[in-house]
Image 1 (cartoon, rainbow, N blue to C red):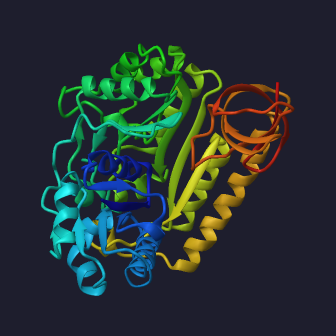
Image 2 (cartoon, rainbow, N blue to C red):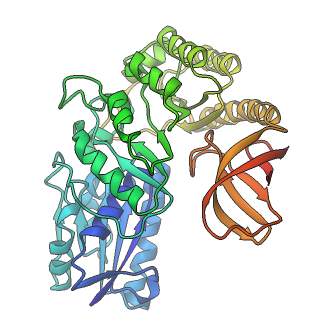
Length: 438
């Protein structure tokens, strides 16, 4: 029996891929190990989206390689987006790597592990547009679980390498997603987070229509399912039917994650975003008009080639006007293989840094004000983590895990396991809240 230790980097979509690899392992030959020091095989599931993610992946691979010299590790497997993007370079530069597994080949994990143990050093990245492997069962189910509803992307934004790493948009069948969510909720999951490269494109490739609203309606019929959260809702295909679901469906959290990337029409055009400032503002207005207490999150890219001071000022004014509940930002990363790599008027790192700092300072003030408005209010909170017998950490509907804030909760009674509780907000921080259990 060989112990296999998995290290997962990057987004929640990678978490799902790792979970599937673990579920596929031949239990007669391999077992998942939480202890890297006692592992015979290390699998690093990498991210390769932007420079900082690539650097983290490389550092993690190099650190893992040390266990082949200093620990029990016999084989090092590198999987995921970085593996798909730079397979030959990784094999040449890091000789400790035994096998490279692309994003469409991790379903072959048992064969790959067995071949590597026999001394074969190889690359498998030849199945980019594979069909989603249905029917895998996660062994350890948490109260919050991610469910991938499609793979790949057809948007071809000029800054983005994802279509070359994940392939074209491929939606899963509605009944297969339903079966997975039903299994997860039977095993204790109560919050299901629907993810994809672009969730609003769900269904267009297999049903010839945008079907995210119908998917949510169907999932809501699962009795044990309490919360549905949707991430990565591109603005161009947020349909009236989906807005109605957010308005009327009690299980669908009133939380909308819309990656806008920018708001200047000239920059949006250079990015090949299929939307405009006017269309985006119209969607935001509709969401806030129709959905009471909606929480809107967005992400933005700063320093895209050709972004002028006027473009940046326009973005700042847009943020001041709309006051997003949650906002994340990235400094543009110049990625080879994308159209933006060769665009003129590249922005210096110093200007990117300045603009990033200025924007995030603005958002900090907005977040602080919005949090202050929650003072004294009571929310249903998913308490997930125990600090000690009197202190816990949780999230309300307006906070997604890992990317948004948290609520620090004090309690006179001991909470033994994760669950939903009423919490009154008694103090605020810039991005987080402080509450007491009622």
